[in-house]
Image (cartoon, rainbow, N blue to C red; front, side, top):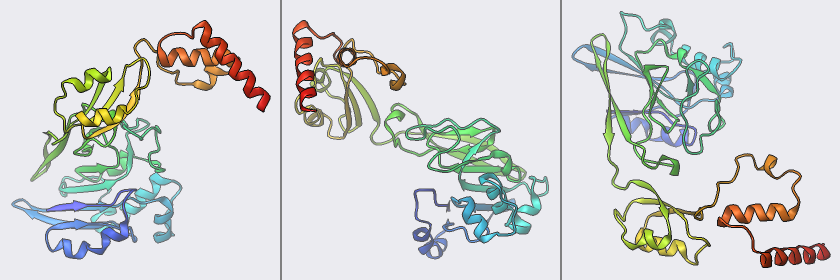
Length: 312
């Protein structure tokens, strides 16, 4: 059986469309939030396991359906949404020994105290990802396990029982070499008994290759992989991507870092403030090519600059 909830990039209405049909096949989807999270009860030899499906919600959405709730921020909005579960939810604010078999499936930005999860790819803000503010993992104290989506790096949040599984595939170039996995959670009579990450080997790995173009394409290996190539050739080469894709058809990105060239400073504003044009151009050329301008090139740049000033 499967259980799902939409994320901030999904259409809740579209997911709701077939939810009734899919439920007949043992696939349960919670699309739109309409006042309370959907709850699904399954059974094993120990009895019932209660799953609470919390879709991606915004504070404004929760306020609309729960106008009397005390909602001051995103964290309290999620708290109000979970409280709307009634006897199966808020009435058990803490995971009681008598009812330990409750699982939350949610798509939220969850932190442990003031500690944000480890981010990846385009997830760059410390407490906000995809315009979503964060909520504290303490909100999930009433569940024996919280299965989270939204962050693309597998990790626990504060405790083992609150966990991001991460996606099964790499979705960003900075995940090159990352070990992907799925999380197997065994729930026994008294709650979670074992949490085990199961490693996944994708059909196509994502790899970062660095070196001269000729060397990279001379003896290609695992040619179906997704490739990010950083070329160390002294100057950009014509049709470099076409040559790369002839060897690696699934090449995704190509950039340059000439041999001996330095990386650009993270704070370019401070690095360039107050410098004259000639010095800025000299610095840029040196960083890109690994050597300074020659005397002839300095004179050529000066002449071009003077001509451009006359046109202005």
